[in-house]
Amino acid sequence: MSETYSDQSRGKFNINATNSSWMAEFDSNLAEHDNNLPHLKLLSEIGSVQYAASEKQIVAVIFKGVLYNRSDLARANHLFDKNDWSDVEFLLNLYLATGSNIIGQLRGIYNILIWDANQKRLFCSRDPLGFEPLFYGIVQSKYVFSNSIATLLQYPGLNREINRPALADYLSRRWPLYDETYYLAIKRVMVGHYILIQDNLLENHQYWDPSPPGTPDDTMSEADFEEFEDYLEQAVERCLRFGKSGIFLSGGLDSVSIAAVASDLCRKNNFPDPLALSLVFPDPGINEEDIQKRVASGLGIEQILIPFDEAVGEMGLISGTLSFTGNFPQPIQNPWRIAYNNLAQRGVDKDCEVILTGIGGDDWLTVNPGYIADLIKNLDVSGSFNFINALRRSFNAPTIPVIRYMLWTIGLRPIIASSGRKTFNRLMPSQFYNYRFKRISRVKATPEWIAPDPQLRQQLDLRTNQTIDELLKRPEPSGPYGFYKHDARSTTFSHPMLTLELEEDFEAGKLLGIKLLHPFWDADLIQYLCRIPPRLLLKGGHDKGIVRQTIARRFPNIGFDRQKKVIAGSFIKNTLILEGMEAFKRIGGLQYLIKFGIIQNINDNFIEKLLIDKDLNENHRVWELLTLEAWLRSHG
Image (cartoon, rainbow, N blue to C red; front, side, top):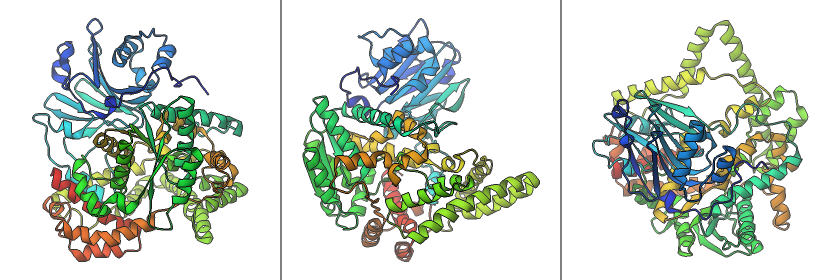
């Protein structure tokens, strides 16, 4: 493994360095006329957030968080690192020595603001995956920054108006603006991006791309898999350095692999053994209690098992979530949030300071089904059927529908459609653009029950049209992995749905006084995984082959070599049916959503219709409506 980003020289990380809120102010108007450093002001107390300035060079830096690779940065940039420098002093001197290219080199969980008065420009960034949120608002000529929306809203003069178009688009399953929040005056710095403020202009720039041109790398072989264990160990060890650890242990490959690596590292480094924290689901179809117990026993670690009903409490999953959602700056996304928060509290009671999960394994260890289109396009018959068989072995699904879906729906049809679009764009670009625009507009149209307010609906139409225009200008899939990468999460890692999940984890961790971390969302590990060709990720003829065989050898009698993915869709559906209508009646309907003009007047029959629909996506609308209503009542 490369020495880059392998820094293990620092000690235990301080949880308060990432769990506390802060606020800073930058006056862009004065900065244009005066090189006085205080134009970048830290409005929070010095402590977990650090400030440093060099009057000679007229540079100021604000840093909040932890830095994983300080020693590597010093070595790679030929900078003498003084032992008595704080992280922010180190970064100040690194910037003075190398300039703004340091932003793409940093690894950790952090926010960083750099004001360069000589260049009259301000850089603002967050860690590549966004474990530390970063938001900003504008009041006259002043930019205000914070890692907390609630903190930012305390700034005098900042508009607290709710972003009605964003909420209506959320219910319409659209995300036209990745940087917006549910407050009109507050935006987020997107993950993998930095913002540059110069000459009273604000620009977004991407500094991190996990899957640049040239990935996957076909020169990789199975021999290169040894690096995977190094990267995974590095990702887990970074998390363990926050203190005593707990593991959200299910019976799946992802969390089991994290638990195994964490247990080994804790013993190697004389850390306390991790604590296994497991939920026991009442549905036999997703109950993994036996596997959970056998894994914890095999690792020789203590385990706490809690029945799901006990974890959600007497109010039930939905009503319990509605009473809890006011603690969050956005509607709760994760339907399991209150159950896992209560499970995490058991870990806190046992002195855990960080809890690790297997989240991210489904995103980065699996092969995007779009790969079948590349195989068919390249006339790779053997590869196509090997891929289909690998998915059949890894998921519980009827054989004939799987084959039909793979060969036609996401195989041949996208190839034919892409070829047709290329032809018509060449022969009649204007007419074909108009045809596609109208066709997509019908698909993406706002449902009739959303945005009865004509002014709001007009705003939504403008936003949707802009999104469609961008979609139509998107280049067609090309190259050996064109379809594989076209819609893969590796190319949409900054999507708001993923960002909101991490921001929610950050807020949940603050409430509990711990860190919730996902080693599979480590930037260096992800970059490595994106390089691996799909055929190697399917090692052994199964999905997640890169970890499956290792785990199967570690636990030979459990059956991980043939384990299929557990899908909780039916359990969620049944929970919504059992609790949805009762929760709707308990809160007295959707008064605030109606008051804000986001939906029309909805009655019991409408909710009942959604709940009995065969499509889980329609059932889930009840969750979205109820959590959004509860959030609006607390924040609107």
